[in-house]
Length: 165
Image: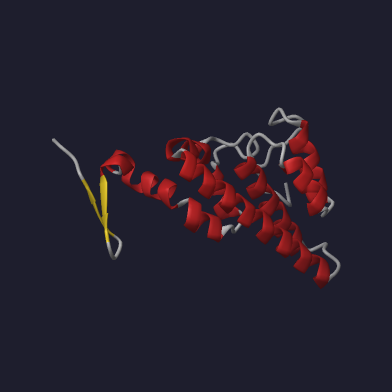
Protein backbone atom coordinates (compact mmCIF):
# COMPACT_ATOMS: atom_id res chain seq x y z
CA UNK A 1 0.00 0.00 0.00
CA UNK A 2 2.82 2.46 0.67
CA UNK A 3 4.15 2.60 -2.89
CA UNK A 4 0.92 2.37 -4.91
CA UNK A 5 -1.63 3.78 -2.48
CA UNK A 6 -4.23 2.31 -0.16
CA UNK A 7 -6.74 1.59 -2.94
CA UNK A 8 -4.31 -0.52 -5.01
CA UNK A 9 -5.44 -4.15 -5.39
CA UNK A 10 -3.26 -6.66 -7.17
CA UNK A 11 -2.95 -10.40 -7.50
CA UNK A 12 -1.37 -12.49 -10.24
CA UNK A 13 -3.70 -12.74 -13.19
CA UNK A 14 -5.90 -9.78 -12.16
CA UNK A 15 -6.14 -8.59 -15.76
CA UNK A 16 -6.23 -12.17 -17.09
CA UNK A 17 -2.82 -11.68 -18.65
CA UNK A 18 0.49 -13.26 -17.65
CA UNK A 19 2.08 -10.67 -19.94
CA UNK A 20 0.82 -7.91 -17.65
CA UNK A 21 2.22 -9.71 -14.60
CA UNK A 22 5.64 -10.06 -16.22
CA UNK A 23 5.48 -6.48 -17.43
CA UNK A 24 4.93 -5.27 -13.86
CA UNK A 25 7.79 -7.41 -12.60
CA UNK A 26 10.23 -5.86 -15.07
CA UNK A 27 8.99 -2.35 -14.27
CA UNK A 28 9.59 -3.05 -10.57
CA UNK A 29 13.08 -4.34 -11.40
CA UNK A 30 13.64 -1.20 -13.48
CA UNK A 31 14.19 -3.11 -16.70
CA UNK A 32 12.17 -0.99 -19.17
CA UNK A 33 13.67 -2.82 -22.16
CA UNK A 34 12.31 -6.15 -20.91
CA UNK A 35 9.04 -4.53 -19.80
CA UNK A 36 8.48 -3.29 -23.36
CA UNK A 37 8.68 -6.84 -24.69
CA UNK A 38 5.72 -7.82 -22.50
CA UNK A 39 3.89 -4.49 -22.95
CA UNK A 40 3.51 -5.31 -26.65
CA UNK A 41 1.35 -8.29 -25.70
CA UNK A 42 -0.78 -6.66 -22.98
CA UNK A 43 -4.50 -6.37 -23.69
CA UNK A 44 -4.82 -2.81 -22.36
CA UNK A 45 -1.79 -0.87 -23.63
CA UNK A 46 -2.86 2.59 -22.41
CA UNK A 47 -3.65 1.38 -18.90
CA UNK A 48 -0.47 -0.69 -18.79
CA UNK A 49 1.74 2.24 -19.80
CA UNK A 50 0.06 4.57 -17.26
CA UNK A 51 0.51 1.95 -14.50
CA UNK A 52 4.22 1.77 -15.40
CA UNK A 53 4.56 5.56 -15.33
CA UNK A 54 2.83 5.62 -11.95
CA UNK A 55 5.10 2.93 -10.53
CA UNK A 56 8.28 4.56 -11.84
CA UNK A 57 7.32 8.00 -10.50
CA UNK A 58 6.46 6.53 -7.11
CA UNK A 59 9.71 4.57 -6.97
CA UNK A 60 11.71 7.65 -8.05
CA UNK A 61 10.43 9.61 -5.06
CA UNK A 62 10.34 6.77 -2.54
CA UNK A 63 12.35 7.38 0.63
CA UNK A 64 14.30 4.10 0.22
CA UNK A 65 15.86 5.01 -3.13
CA UNK A 66 19.61 5.10 -2.59
CA UNK A 67 21.05 7.18 -5.41
CA UNK A 68 20.02 10.30 -7.28
CA UNK A 69 21.03 8.57 -10.53
CA UNK A 70 18.54 5.77 -9.85
CA UNK A 71 15.80 8.31 -9.15
CA UNK A 72 16.63 10.17 -12.35
CA UNK A 73 16.57 6.94 -14.37
CA UNK A 74 13.18 6.03 -12.86
CA UNK A 75 11.82 9.47 -13.75
CA UNK A 76 13.06 9.04 -17.34
CA UNK A 77 11.30 5.66 -17.50
CA UNK A 78 8.10 7.24 -16.18
CA UNK A 79 8.28 9.93 -18.87
CA UNK A 80 8.90 7.25 -21.52
CA UNK A 81 5.85 5.21 -20.47
CA UNK A 82 3.67 8.33 -20.28
CA UNK A 83 4.68 9.30 -23.84
CA UNK A 84 3.96 5.74 -24.94
CA UNK A 85 0.44 5.97 -23.47
CA UNK A 86 -0.09 9.31 -25.25
CA UNK A 87 0.95 7.83 -28.62
CA UNK A 88 -1.36 4.84 -28.24
CA UNK A 89 -4.25 7.02 -27.09
CA UNK A 90 -3.84 9.45 -29.99
CA UNK A 91 -3.83 6.57 -32.47
CA UNK A 92 -6.88 5.05 -30.78
CA UNK A 93 -8.78 8.34 -31.11
CA UNK A 94 -7.85 8.55 -34.81
CA UNK A 95 -9.12 5.01 -35.36
CA UNK A 96 -12.35 5.13 -33.29
CA UNK A 97 -13.02 8.03 -30.94
CA UNK A 98 -15.93 6.32 -29.17
CA UNK A 99 -13.94 3.16 -28.42
CA UNK A 100 -10.97 5.24 -27.28
CA UNK A 101 -13.21 7.23 -24.94
CA UNK A 102 -14.70 3.99 -23.60
CA UNK A 103 -11.18 2.69 -22.87
CA UNK A 104 -10.45 5.78 -20.77
CA UNK A 105 -13.74 5.40 -18.89
CA UNK A 106 -13.39 1.72 -17.92
CA UNK A 107 -13.23 1.05 -14.18
CA UNK A 108 -9.85 -0.26 -13.06
CA UNK A 109 -9.71 -3.53 -11.15
CA UNK A 110 -6.27 -2.49 -9.84
CA UNK A 111 -7.68 0.68 -8.26
CA UNK A 112 -11.39 0.26 -7.48
CA UNK A 113 -13.25 3.51 -8.05
CA UNK A 114 -10.62 4.85 -10.47
CA UNK A 115 -10.63 5.17 -14.23
CA UNK A 116 -7.54 5.53 -16.43
CA UNK A 117 -7.72 9.33 -16.36
CA UNK A 118 -7.93 9.28 -12.55
CA UNK A 119 -4.87 7.07 -12.32
CA UNK A 120 -3.00 9.28 -14.80
CA UNK A 121 -3.69 12.33 -12.64
CA UNK A 122 -2.74 10.42 -9.47
CA UNK A 123 0.51 9.36 -11.20
CA UNK A 124 1.26 12.96 -12.18
CA UNK A 125 0.99 12.11 -15.88
CA UNK A 126 -0.13 15.64 -16.61
CA UNK A 127 0.86 15.53 -20.29
CA UNK A 128 -1.37 12.47 -20.75
CA UNK A 129 -4.23 14.18 -18.90
CA UNK A 130 -3.98 17.33 -21.04
CA UNK A 131 -3.48 15.58 -24.39
CA UNK A 132 -5.71 12.51 -24.01
CA UNK A 133 -7.93 13.21 -21.04
CA UNK A 134 -9.50 16.54 -21.94
CA UNK A 135 -12.46 14.80 -23.63
CA UNK A 136 -13.14 12.72 -20.51
CA UNK A 137 -12.83 15.78 -18.27
CA UNK A 138 -15.21 17.74 -20.51
CA UNK A 139 -17.67 14.82 -20.46
CA UNK A 140 -17.53 14.64 -16.67
CA UNK A 141 -18.35 18.32 -16.32
CA UNK A 142 -20.80 18.71 -19.20
CA UNK A 143 -22.41 15.26 -19.11
CA UNK A 144 -24.92 14.70 -21.89
CA UNK A 145 -24.71 18.33 -22.97
CA UNK A 146 -21.39 17.66 -24.64
CA UNK A 147 -21.86 15.55 -27.75
CA UNK A 148 -18.88 15.67 -30.10
CA UNK A 149 -21.12 14.89 -33.07
CA UNK A 150 -23.05 18.13 -32.50
CA UNK A 151 -20.17 20.41 -31.62
CA UNK A 152 -18.96 23.26 -33.81
CA UNK A 153 -15.48 24.59 -33.12
CA UNK A 154 -14.23 27.97 -34.23
CA UNK A 155 -10.75 29.50 -34.32
CA UNK A 156 -9.61 30.65 -30.92
CA UNK A 157 -11.13 27.69 -29.06
CA UNK A 158 -14.75 28.92 -29.19
CA UNK A 159 -17.22 26.00 -29.32
CA UNK A 160 -20.98 25.79 -29.79
CA UNK A 161 -23.12 22.78 -28.91
CA UNK A 162 -26.08 22.30 -31.25
CA UNK A 163 -29.24 20.96 -29.67
CA UNK A 164 -32.94 20.79 -30.30
CA UNK A 165 -35.60 20.98 -27.57
